[in-house]
Image 1: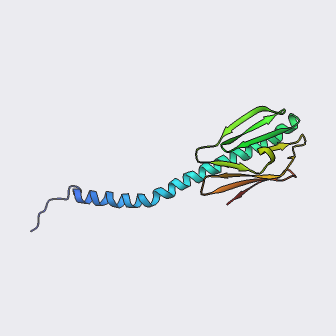
Image 2: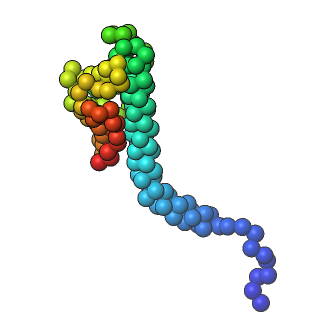
Image 3: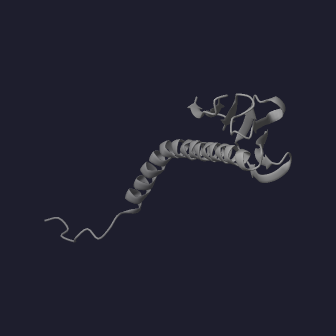
Length: 143
């Protein structure tokens, strides 16, 4: 008759094999998770830019005009000419670009923009564009 002892645990070889299988599975999941985090950071910042554009539109009515000044690493919302209302820096790895004259999205007192244009927000692998129309419409476009 064979040894009648009950199995009391795992051997060292079984634990090493289980950890190796777990490491292989994690190596497939980790790059996808990192890209997911980068894309969510991009979406979050794009939503913040959109909200601040809407803020500038509403401030334009109250303060006889407002503008959003863009740079590569963020933007500022300004009222009454050049009084800074709010400044926002882009998160690491996020690049902001636009095609507005002097990098300024300016709103008139009636909350309509002076010019139409596009703000592009990129993390290197994905770009979200915020499109501003002369009729005041603001929309998203993901590439």
